[in-house]
Amino acid sequence: MTLERPTIEQQIEHFDVLIVGAGISGVGGAYHLVDQMPGTSFVVLESQETFGGTWTTHKYPGIRSDSDLHTFGYRFKPWVGAPIATAEEIKKYMGEVIEENHLAPHIRYKHRIDRASWSSKEALWTVDATNTATEEKRRFTCDFLWMCQGYYRHSEGYTPEWAGMADFQGRIVHPQTWPADMDYTGKKVVVIGSGATAATVVPAMAKDVAHITMLQRSPTYFRAGRNAIEIAETLRELQINEEWIHEITRRKILHDQSLFAKRTFEEPETVKQELLSGVRSYLGPDYDIDKHFTPSYRPWRQRLAFVPDGDLFKGIASGKASVVTDEIDRFVANGILLKSGTVLEADIIVTATGFNLSPLGDIDFSIDGKALDFHDTVTYRGMMFTGVPNMVWVFGYFRASWTLRADLVGDFVCKLLTHMRGKNARQVTVALRPEDKDMPLLDWIDSDNFNPGYMMRGMHLLPRRGDKPEWMHNQDYWSEKDEIPATNLDDAAFIYR
Ligand SMILES: Cc1cc2nc3c(=O)[nH]c(=O)nc-3n(C[C@H](O)[C@H](O)[C@H](O)COP(=O)(O)OP(=O)(O)OC[C@H]3O[C@@H](n4cnc5c(N)ncnc54)[C@H](O)[C@@H]3O)c2cc1C
Image 1 (tube, rainbow, N blue to C red):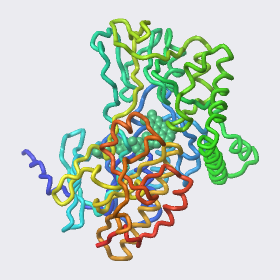
Image 2: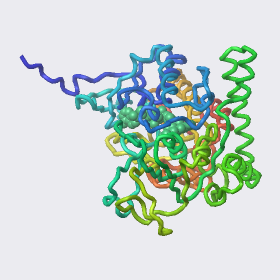
Image 3: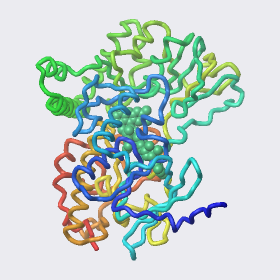
Image 4: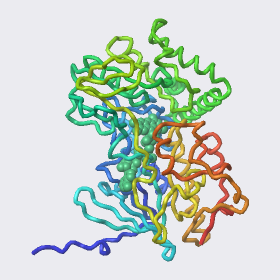
């Protein structure tokens, strides 16, 4: 006897809240719902086989955070290890959050969301997903959509097209899709890029390769230091409990970061010299710091990568790793021909060249049958979008840990849902108010303020912003930590039905 395959309609499941993604934001969102809104029905749909998001996708050698885990960790669960953590350590921590709060039954893995359609008549999202193992289609409905899908496409990284790539006889790999069978022992490796990923992969591979070269078009700022936080160490010596240590260490780190960020605007030259002298302390006076480690922009205009225990610089000082600052002319059979005329020989080329921005998980959205282009919307504090009902998005910080914002947005969602229940409202949409009528509409982020390549390439995919704090993602934790909790949900920007 053959069983009839159920049709999509027979499988519809309804939840109060549907969370997209089981990365640090989605797992955090699930925690906040359980903690603050007991009794709310919810599901987390995740296309990968397990939780972790970024920390599951990336498997390149040395993969680690570049933020400290006291602030990249949740505010509600102490981080007890060294501040810079490996992907495995972060996943273990997230696994504990799932276990301690009984979140596992709420998470469905291998569920890729393809479509989400809002119906104003029913005040409901209909979400179509595919089981990636069986290709089976599943349909869900929910009152509220909580977008925790991150900001880049997980399936493939960004690799520019260089002339001659097909001529190269070796292997080209992107760190985001690192092959399990990659053997680089005794090989000549060139890593293209100079961001946090390159700075991680170079020292991690250096000990096993014949030589590894970091090839960069232009230098990046790095901050080198011990992988430890002094105040946490002192408090541990004093046998203070871990909850207190977590909270005090977070406050100290945030305080220091705030001073640092302020200084990058007020005294950029002094900050620049401090960063460079950190690098010089590892590489010595004869190394050409000007050429290889002195960017043309002011510190913090792009993400500033932390180099724990100076491992990148130790690799360079040992002679196993080197940095070349030049431009690629073309790939050739045995490596890369540089514009200067030199050929960098390579068996393996690692393209640490960034991401493809995918602001909303490559999901086809529609509102009442009309396709939704997020660039037509204006963002409310980088969390909601004009004309898009019952949806909140977690987009974290670049200059502070992402999770600080995931926790703030978690509180905001719970407050908003409670407010809606109190008003008996089924729908909330943000809309520009009469006083916003003449507000200029700008790109998502000011490129003078922050301008990494993936953002610049994908700006047309992102919602727009206004010039008032409530109509932008200002990337400023230090103002938002007070402003978001104080949001007046009866402000005219919120329309309830
Ligand atoms: C290598 C690397 C290192 C980083 N280090 C730091 C750091 O140290 N500090 C910091 O603050 N930030 C860091 N970031 C930024 C980082 O991505 C975020 O901080 C954070 O991990 C994002 O968490 P998230 O849960 O919001 O998104 P993600 O980690 O991107 O997770 C999103 C999840 O949603 C799932 N998903 C997406 N679309 C769909 C769909 N259509 N259907 C179903 N599921 C879907 C994905 O599979 C994924 O599991 C780093 C980024 C990278 C790539």
